[in-house]
Length: 163
Image (cartoon, rainbow, N blue to C red):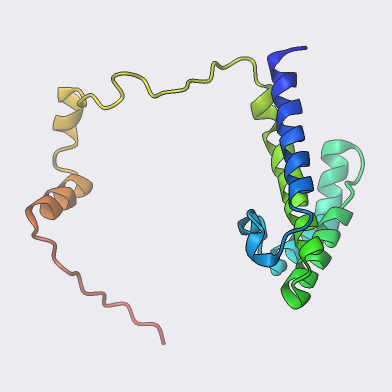
């Protein structure tokens, strides 16, 4: 068994343990409720997934159309959570988001080409080469940074008016 497979099994088991641990929680104890998106987003994702353009794209890329029912279930669970504060619906929604996130990051976890580092390189904050700092000394950003350091920040007036 490779390290990547162990990492994936570990991530999947952590998600499973978290879903078991949160089965008897109240709204205030939902640790990952920050993962719940606005309900309109789930509806938009479902509408986009089932549109003619998306179906054509799915068929072109994958050779078949994709199952969009999870977006509909997520939208329904989100509505239950928003209207009735249904904790089970929120937990199902959070688990769906975790599964979606794990699927999105699967390529990252399975990547055995790049070596992942645990700390930044030792010289990550060394000064820029002289030619580069000389080239950039008169740029707009450098002038604004100099003004900011000196405390000469001018409040610019906007002449834009929206009617």
